[in-house]
Amino acid sequence: MTSKRVALLATLYGVFTGAFMNAMLALSGHGEGVSLWTFPVWTTVGFFVIYRLTFAYAWNCRAERFVPIRSTRY
Image (cartoon, rainbow, N blue to C red; front, top):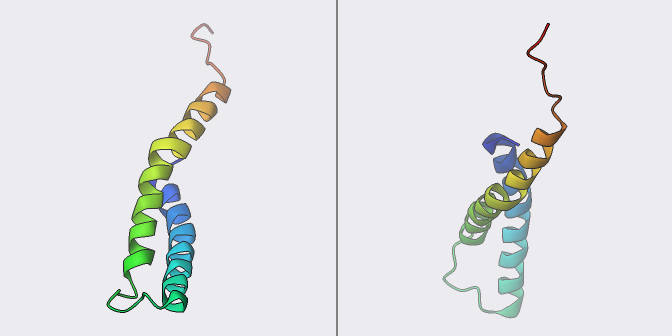
């Protein structure tokens, strides 16, 4: 799994989760002074780091095992 694919997944989940967190802050009454972009940006960055270090690494190790071994003899 490439970094580009991980960035796409992180963006899809991070923006939605950050927007949800902004909505929860606004509904609870503690959202004054918090930028609209704070949670979507930081959750996207956080998801990217977590996905890249855990999920993508495990996926690439798994995919590597399924690649057929080429024979050097012809």
